[in-house]
Amino acid sequence: MNRPLKLSLTRRYHFAASHRLHSPAFSPEENLRLYGKCSNPYGHGHNYVVDVTIGGPVDAETGMVANLGELDPFVEREVVEAFDHKFLNEEVAEFRSAVPTTENVCREIFRRLKHFPSARLERVRIEETSKNSFEFTGESAGVEQRKP
Picture 1 (cartoon, rainbow, N blue to C red):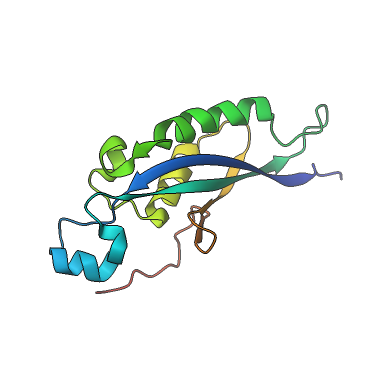
Picture 2 (cartoon, rainbow, N blue to C red):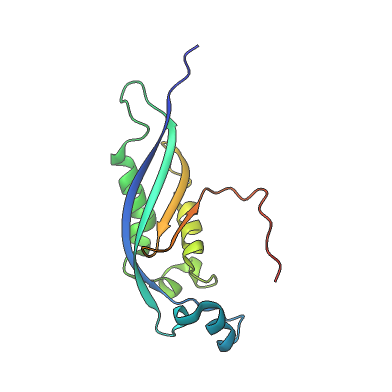
């Protein structure tokens, strides 16, 4: 029995945005201790690099996992237009109540892209700096929450 060949495709996107790491639940001193210079009241910016990995069977007729002509506009609309040149804390609704750490940005991008209709979203990786990158696969089972 021939099973369809399954492959993954990773596509790279870019956006620039600023954010402030600050929680109203913490005192100014606690915010400074937790987030350091990233809690600057004026915020700071990054040129983010986002890798989106989708997977599925290779279509026998097209030879593709997904059509980039469908994926690119989907990511452009759901992520790039929504985040590019924005102050995340104020201009992206999800971050008005959640601290826009890059971990949370990564999870939000995954949430926005998981409904791509032509292939299964496998992973989102976001690079904040040349030293910091974060990945999310949408899986949370078996992960214990740390207690303060």
